Length: 399
Image (cartoon, rainbow, N blue to C red; front, side, top):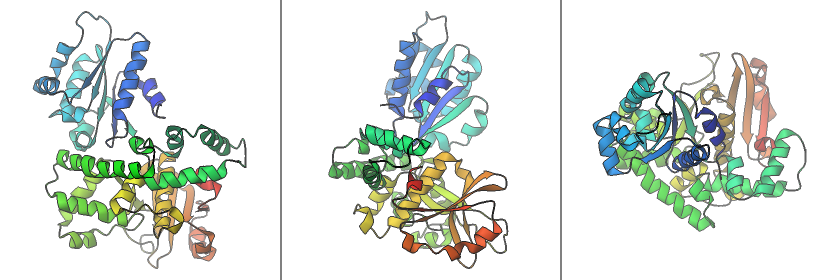
C-alpha cells in the first residue's frame, strides 16, 4: 500500500534540489524510500539505497561526505539516485547534504529521510536554503486509515460523499464505526495493521516507551522523567490552554527548560500548538496556545484510556483534536487559530483562508451542548468568518 504523499515524492524525484522526507518515527519513511527505489529501478535508473544504521557505512560518511562515492558504481556516466534512510545519524547531516549538493548535484540526486534530531538542527534551515524541498510524513489520516484497514468500500463511499456525487450512503454507520476506531487507536501504520484491539494497545505502548525515549536521547534531553511527565500532562490537557507558569510549577522545571521540551515535542512531530486569533488585543484574551496531538492513539496511550467513545469523559477533547487534524491537513498549520475573550467566550478554530476572511468551526460532541447565543459577539465582530458547528455523527466531520 502506498501513502498519499507517494505521488508528490515521485513528481519531485527528478528535481535538482534534494528531496527531504521528515516525520515521526514509525510513520513509514523507510517504506516510502524503498518504494521510490523500486519505482526508479523499474524506470531503468541507477539507484542506490543506504541505511545509516549500518555502522561501517555511517563511519565512512561521517568521516567525509565524498566517501559516498566508494559505494556508488564508478562506471555510470549518468545521474545517479542516492536514497539515504536515517540521515539524522550523521554527526552533521546538514553539512553532508550541503557539500554533496553544491559539488555534485549534476551527478547525484539525493533523497533522504530524517527524524527529529536532524530537523531540530538550526543549520538545517539556513545552510540548505534553496537546496532542498521538505515533505512531512504524518501518521495516517482517516482516508489512509480506511485504506490500510482494507475498508475499500467505505473509502469509496467516503470519497463520493466528499465530492458530492452522493449525499447519503448506506455504509455511513460503518464509516462512523471506523472513525471511532481511528480516534481510539490512531494512525500509526503498524498499529492500524494489528488484528485486534489488545495488539493495537501493545503496539502503542511500544511506540510510547521505545521511540519516544529515542527522541529524547537524540534531542539531548537529560531529565527523562520530567520530559515524560510533561508529555503525559499535555495528553490530559488536549485542547486546553497551555499555561507555562502552571506547568513549570507542577513539574518543578524552569520555564526555560519547559519551553525547550515543548520545542522538542513539536519538532519530533508529536504535538502542535495553536495560537490565538485576535484583532482587538484589549478585549481578546491571552497569548497562551492550545495543545493538540498529531496522533490520537499516542495521546490515548499516554493517558491509558481506551473506553468506548460515547462513555468517555474526554470525548469532547478527542473530537476537537480530530477536527484540528482535519483542518491542519487542509490549511497550513499556522493558519489555524482559536478565539477567546477575557470573559470566557470562545470559538474552537479559526481557519484563515485569506488576509481578512476564512471560516470558524465550533466542535461539540452533541447538540445538547450547543448554545447559539454564546457566539453572537463573534458573529457580529467577524462576519467574514462564518461559524460552522460540527457534531459527532454529522457529515461535516467526514469532509
